[in-house]
Amino acid sequence: MSERDLTADSEPRRRRRGATGLATDASVRAALIQAAQRQLASAPDGDIATRAVCEAVGVTQPVLYRLFGDKNGLLDAVADAAFEQYARRKQDLEVTDDPVTDLYAGWNDHMAFAAENPALYQLMFTPRPHSAGTTYRRILDLLEATLMRCAAAGALVTTPRLAAQLILPANIGVALSRIAQPHLFDDPALPDRTRDAIFAAVLAEAKAPSEPDPVRAAARQMRSQLALTGTDRLEPAETALLDRWLDRIDGPH
Picture 1 (cartoon, rainbow, N blue to C red):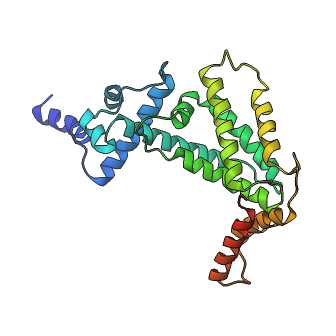
Picture 2: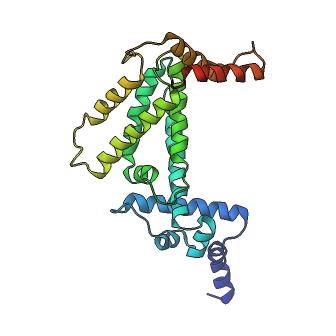
Picture 3: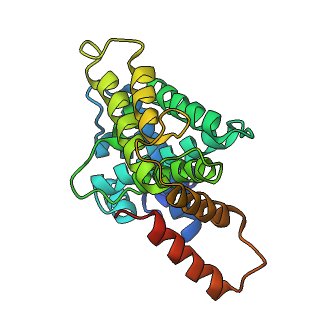
C-alpha cells in the first residue's frame, strides 16, 4: 500500500479523533452517548469507564471531556437521552376520556419501563453528586399534566403539584427497590398495592375527604380547567388575577 493510500485511509480517523465543528461535535456526542448506554446496559456494576466509551467510538478522552466536561456530564447526557426514550414511550400511550384511567396506565407503564431498562432507570433516578440532569423535573411535568386533567374532572382531593410530589417518589421508590434488592422486594403485587394506597390519598373517587370543602374543591377544579383550556371571556390580566384567587382558595390554610 502506498504512502498516499495510508494517508487517505487514516484521514477519517484523524478527523474524528480530533473532532471539531458543530456538525462533527453533534455526531461524536451522539455516538459517545450511545456507546455509554450500551456499556451501562452490559455492566454488572451499573457503571461506565470513559476510556472504554472513547475507544468504542474512536476518539480520545480529551474529546469526551471537551464535549461533556467530565464523567458526570456524560452520565447526565445519557440520563437525558433516556428521558427522551421515556417521553416517546409516554406519547405512544393511549389518552382516553378518563384521566384517572390514564393515571393508572401511567403508573403501570413507569414500572414496566424500569423493569425493561434497569441500568438506565437507576442512572435516571438514583441521586448522583453534582448531577445536572433534568430527568426528575421533566417526568414530574408529564405526571402533573395528567393530574391536571384529573383535577379538571373533579377527581383530585389535592392540587396536581402536591399529588405529583406524592405519586412520583412512591413510583420511583418501588421501582428502584425491585431493581436493586429484588430478593427483599419480591412480592409481584407490591407495585399495585403501593399504587392503590397512594392513589387512595389523592383521588376523590378512591377516598372522600373527611371534611369536604366544596368551595375549595370547586376552586381547584376551575383553576385546573382554566389551565387546560383557557377562556376568551376574560382579559389576560383578569385571568391571571382569577388564577391567583383560586390558588389562594385551594392553598393550605
